[in-house]
Image (cartoon, rainbow, N blue to C red; front, side):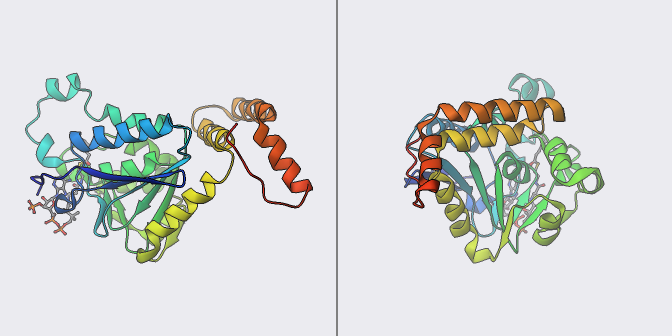
Length: 260
Ligand code: HXC
């Protein structure tokens, strides 16, 4: 595994929705540096393109991603991983401003679980399994897992997962608040694309600002967050889409948002 010559990801773009498919199935989509750059470059390019209004990120049926590429990391020294700021570029995915939806089937472990948590909405199949097994390798999560898992599921389950390395099945992950929508395995990608298309039909500036406002809940006090929300809410009255959305409601018709 890992010696595939194909591209590390496959991409397509339709109706304002960009799809990124991790494409190292033999290595269970282990996230090597090449994959990281390909995913982040693509997401950043789409974020900058006003025609793209949502992104779906998926893997294969067996694995969303089984983690960072252990074989690539194994022999690295401390000065090497420090100087390269190993994994730092993944964080840029959290700065993409259009919504990103993870479509998770199979294993989402280590960096794979962290990658899913870097997305905004997580659609999972009933057979999906989540975990932060880094402790079994003598390390800890390195792509945000200790922070994002704790915010998603709370201390009790995050400590359990990060200290023992055990996996959660999809049902437990949904109950714990990690998963947005739990669906049959064969419906994962279609559901994620449907979620993305529904977002793509809305006002692009409003969906971007909505994402930013929810994200602020993780970065600020309640008072600052509520004030930020009110200010950006006010700012949407500067868009044509606000006028269109409210006029369409009054006229009992579907709105036609133009992203401005
Ligand atoms: C590199 C990996 C890999 C990984 C699987 N493979 N996970 N290669 N990095 N994270 C490779 C295997 O070596 C194998 O290659 C092939 O994919 C198929 O995997 P198998 O183990 O044979 O499949 P299976 O028996 O079905 O077991 C599936 C699995 C297991 C339970 C998911 O692969 C597994 O435990 N993987 C590692 C999970 C993990 O520890 N993830 C965290 C990584 S660390 P060959 O060549 O033998 O066919 C991380 C962050 C690190 O993500 C942060 C701190 C630095």
